[in-house]
Amino acid sequence: MDLFSNALGVHEKALGLRNERMEVLARNIANADTPHFKARELDFKTVMANVQSTEKMSNTHQNHFAFSDEVMNDDGMRYRVPFNTSMDGNTVEMSVEQAKYGKAAADYQATLSFFENEVSGIRKSLRGD
Image (cartoon, rainbow, N blue to C red):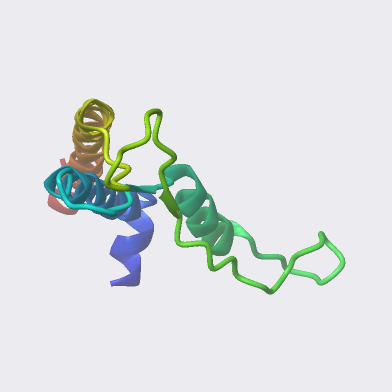
């Protein structure tokens, strides 16, 4: 399994994170009329930076570069600050959520295309093409 996780690169984790982000945005849209619901956002860049720093950083000698053994536990979840306040305390703004969901769907499709290209390359190399 390690062979495939290295071969697929970061695209596998990116696809999972993009899926999670779309779920968070869908949850926000579903709760647009729920009083006191706070809209949340998954900060994709922060989470991917944490994933990449924990996977890529390794040294062969302790003096090569400074490396912290602490792993950042930032899950990337943030509460969104609304442009307009609501009387019932709900911070979901449908136009913002729909726009972010549309962009997230396009980003998901782009990541899925990269992932499919990686899998296709692995298939070709296994078949000997």
